[in-house]
Image 1: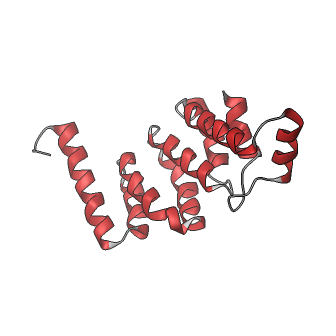
Image 2 (image 1 turned 135 degrees about the vertical axis):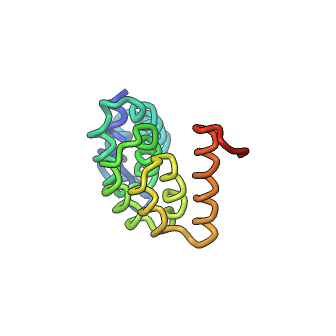
Image 3 (image 1 turned 120 degrees about the vertical axis):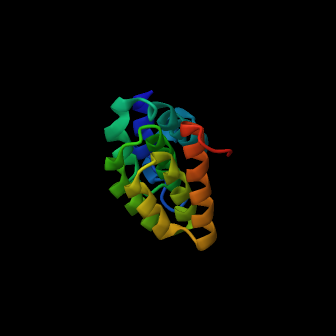
Length: 147
């Protein structure tokens, strides 16, 4: 699984276009580049659940392929490891059209550092929704309020 996940990074699309390397690699094997891309991204999503995938996720967060970055970011959520946050923030800066969505996911980190980054990328309405998600998560874990 990790080898296929690494190929999501190796064969990253740039501006939604496959690299010449990927096209050639797929042609030599009779594989559709788009189908292979999505298979490798799914492999990345699966591999990301394993704590040993930390290095893979850090590398994927630097990808020029926004779908690889989104998959990597989703993978970091289960780890709740603040050491991912600097690379996540840089990815959000590189993909401003995805930044608000990515910022909303940071609530899963349940950390002040993640919250501070999220607030930089959210609209006022997005901040209100983020705070509501925080409240709901607190209710679920502490059972002190009605969600």
